[in-house]
Length: 397
Image (cartoon, rainbow, N blue to C red; front, side, top):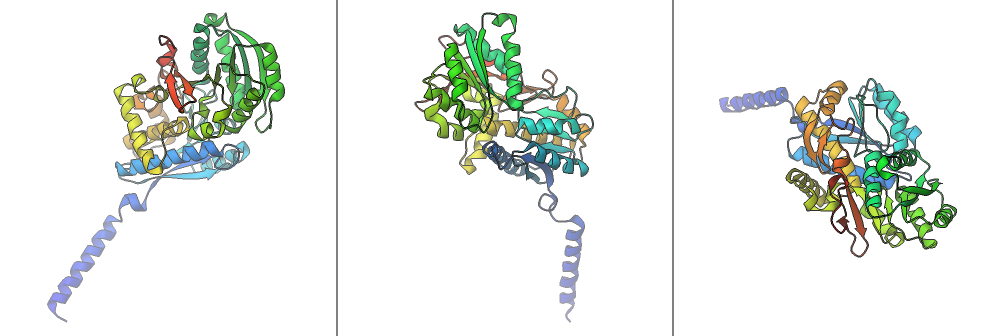
């Protein structure tokens, strides 16, 4: 054979050997996996599927902007079927594999079931439901702000507008129980001594009617109402209230701030429906430049999916982005302990929910300063801010 042939052959062998030594591109062959437990089927599927959409958008955004130190990010989803027992089993399996991080579930009951397993020794759990009271300094972190500041801001709004005869109905699940405790805490503050609770009712998610509860509420003659449930359960409560011609100023869970809820239950909602919400729903006037930039990033990431930001998208996006930030700073080999230490001391990070401060607000990073009261406008599906951040009143609102 000709010498030139051998030279080409040797060059090809050297090139192949060099590529083998380098390995294939790390991002393609060796992704960094974050395990996510979500109720992708069952009664909470509408929440989980939105969470999943947000995280998939974050996956794409992260990989377009460098991944995790050059490694592609991959969210790995497991379905807990809206059953806390299944969520617990899935978490036990992941703990046995010594994963450093679990995101989800979306259910307060499921998060509460998993919490005792991870509080002391990890892995880092970022629950995508905001009901609960994680132990400060533990490995248990929750999305959004606690219920207590939500109700402090909400009752302040009621009180300052002369709405002082309050009735409430809450779901009988863990989220509803936490909401009731937080509402009673806020109602018991000295500043709210003028507010009188005239009726309190309970509703089991899955019931087809709440006529009896709403009849008792109507008899009590409140001037303001709290309906604390999400999704189908909330829709049943609003339908039962409408059937009895109850149309009062009503606050409900921000978990209902998604397009699917309004599309399905819009005609059943009261004229004056209020949410203790995040600045995104209050419009640009309620956001600082960093928050506006965070909203723009999420909006652009969702656009290819024909989706827009909503409360559920935000409640998954911000925690996911915080963990991406941590992994980029610490590296993909970061342990659960390093992740916890990093997030526990995180200040100055700004997401769609606004500025985070995990030192001031342990395990969540958010508090009353991130809350704005907004009103849902039925005529066009928009929202109007009726308070400043933290609940400070707006003139005429």
